[in-house]
Image (cartoon, rainbow, N blue to C red; front, top):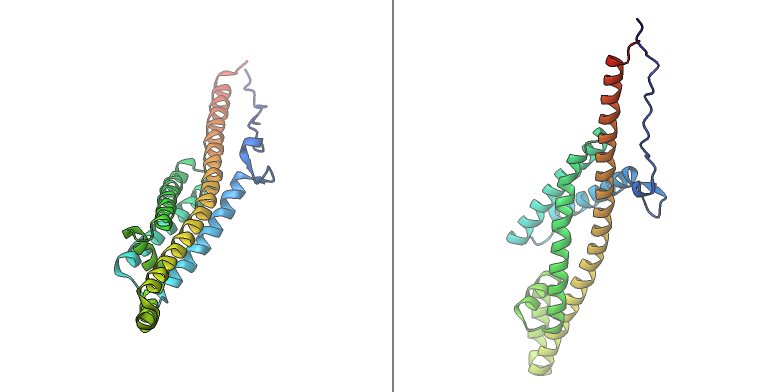
Length: 216
C-alpha cells in the first residue's frame, strides 16, 4: 500500500486576467491599489499639516476636517494591511469611505451649481464664506461703499459668490471623477482577492482530500 505524493498543487486561477487589471490593462489591480493608497496617504498627511498651520480655524468645519482625516488615515492603514495579507474583507472600509465621499462630492457640486444660479441664496453665502476672505472683502466694500454706491456693492457680492460657487463645483467634480476611479480599482482588487481566496480554498481542500483518499 502506497500513498501518492505527486499531487498537482498548481491552480488554474488567472492572476493576470483582464478583469484584474487597471490603467488600460497596464497595471495589476493589486499594484494599482498600493499606488492609490500611497498617493492618498501623502495627500492626507499634507492636509493634516495644513490644518495645523492654518491661520484661521473654524471650530465646526475644522473639527469635521480633522475627524475626516483621522478616519481616512485609519481606512488607508486597513487598506495596506488588506493588500499585505490578501484579505479582501479589509478593503470594504475603504469602499464604504469612498462611496460616502463620492456622494458628498455630488451633493456639494450640485449645491455649487445652485449657488451659481442663485447667488443670493443661503447656500451661496455659505460657499462664499468658505472660499473667499470675507473679512478683507467686507473691509474693501466698506471703504468703497460711499463712492461706488449700493449697486456696485451688490454686483461685487454677486460676482464673489458666483466665482466661489464655480470653483467649488469644479474642484468637487474633479474630486468626484478621481474618487470614482479609485473606488473602481479598489473594488476590482476586492473581487480579485475574493476569487483568489476561493480558488486557494478549493485547491487546498482538493489536496487534503486526495492525500487522504487516493491510496492504492
